[in-house]
Each structure stands twice: as C-alpha cells, then as structure tokens.
Length: 413
Image (tube, rainbow, N blue to C red; front, side, top):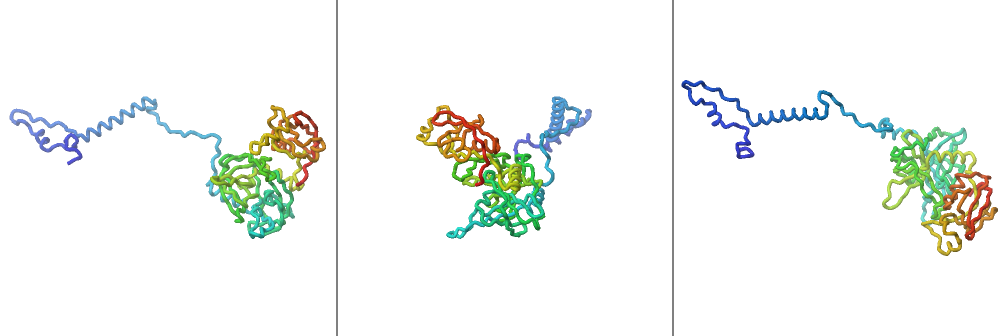
C-alpha cells in the first residue's frame, strides 16, 4: 500500500489492465495491431521537468542577454586597505620578542605603611629603554610612577636589579626619564610614528602589572586621538587635557610607563592610565610616542620642560561641575554678556607685577578668547614663549581693562 490509496498516485500499471490492452480483439481476417507505447507517470514527470529546466534556462539567457557567453562573478574591491602580511598571531610573537628586552619594571621605594604593612601601590611601574650611550641607558616612564621618589630601582627582563637615577620629570605631560648603568644593556626599543596609527590596528602592551613583571597583553586601537580631562593638582578640578591613544589591551596597576607596541615591533605609545569602574571594561590609554619623544628628549637634555609662566591661580567662571555660588557671582559685577572666563584667586610673579588682582576675570589673551583655566593654560603652553609680551583682557568690578605682561619661565615644582 502506498502513501495514498488512490491509484492515480501509483507509478505501477495494473497487470490486468496491461494484459487486456495487449490482447487482440479478433484474430480472423483482421491484422493484429501493435500495442501503443505506454509511459509511466514517473517518466512523464522526468521529461516534463527536463523540458521545464531547458525552457527556464533559455528564457533567463534571453532576458539577461548572456546567451552563448560565459561569465565569471567579480567580487567588489574595497579601496585603500593594506593587505595583511602573515599570520597576525605570529606577528604578535615577533613584535613582543623585539621590544620585550627593552621593557623594565620600576620600583619606587617609598615609605611602607607601617600600620597595614604594605607598600604604596604607586611604587610599582614600568619603563622603556629608548636610548643608550657608552655610560648610561635612558628609560622613559610616567611621572606618577616616580612621583615623590625614594630609592628608585629598575628590574631588567632577565631579573637583574639596578639602581636608577631621575634625570628629569614633567607633571603636565606625565613623562619622566631615568638613567641606569649601560653595562650589559644590549637592547633599546624602536620608537614608531604614532601619527600613522589606524583605528582597529592590533597593538600589544608590555609591562609590570601588579608587580607581575614581563607581562604581555594584546588588543586593538580603539581610538587614535582621544582627549582625557586631567586634574594636575589631584583636587578634582580638571585643569588640563591629555591627548591619548585608547586601546582595549588590558592595562592595570603597574603597567604605567610600559610600552604600547604595534605589529612592527615599534613603540607607538607609553601606557599611562585606565578607567576602572563598575560596568567599565577595556578602556586603557597611552600617551602617543610623538608627544612622548618631544618631552623625553628635552628632559634628557635639560632635566626639565621650559614653559611660559604667568603666575595666576584661577577657577572657571562657568564650570558645570563646580559652579560658583550666586553670592560670588554678584561680587564680580559682570555684564550680562560675559558668561565664560577665568576668575583670579591669587597672583604671583609676572601677573602680580602687571597688577592683576583677586576676582579679576580674564576673558582674552592677545584677543583670543579664554573661557576657562584649561584654555588659559593651553594658550600659555602652546602659543607663547618665555620672555614674550602677552596682552591680557580682563574685567574688574564690571569694567573691561587691558594689561601687558612679560612671561617668565615656569618655576620647577
């Protein structure tokens, strides 16, 4: 029994019907007729399918105009993409091997917490050997790694501990340079061009996280030029901006000062910070190598970074995070049109000599708008030089005034 009881769906011909069809109706005086060719339902279906397929192909060919022509599908080309050269995992191994011997662990021996019997967390960090003379090898690290230094030591990749000397440091850029005895130092890191970094490029971070020296992590460049607000005085007021490379390569306590490396084995950044909070993951930052080297070379040569100095301590007139009280704003007696500026709290040096006073509101430098303490500092550091004249526009008790100041070199802190 088939799936259906009805013979219509059967592919077999009944034997009784077959014999009846083949039997002649009479054999006398009449020729015997040959039986007709009988096709089964299966054969008819097969022939119909074949014909339908041929017709479909012919119709398709006529419509597309490709009858009689052989075609090959050509994939779309993506423009301006550099093809990968080799296995990326193998390239990570090679890049790490090139830089690893030049990355050191740094120990800043501060006073132990006698009550808890632990070493201050900031005493651990990393560094990169970036140049060498006959007598000394020079190491780049972060300022916050060696801040408030006690006895500085460097641990090389082979486990040797050496005393280190502070050559120079800069709190604004968070860069410091150390030196050690060059004897036995055979490897210095190659410094790359951080301006050529691409979004999504594979990078590796090498350093001393949590004191676990010679540690490697990998990730990608999440952002090439991220600006992060920084409080230089650690007082919660953001008075500087740090331009950084954002990466999702794991960066932890102790990685600061270590190398961020591309797949060519070149250092393209110095790891400096991470954002750590509930629900936050994969937000690490490194100072671009081009910024680092400019600062490091000056520190190695002069021991300090020479910047213009005005001598003003100020707060923002319009700060959404720490707004001035209504009573303070009334005392300034400003015109309604003045919404932004830097309110002077104290003056020393050039600013005091020029006659600036408490509660003066600075609004322009050389006719360029000054909207906050951050913009004041950035203008001084980026657009002026020591010894130059600076024209300051400010409001005192609601009256606009101007004064010229001769900038001096910023004292070392």
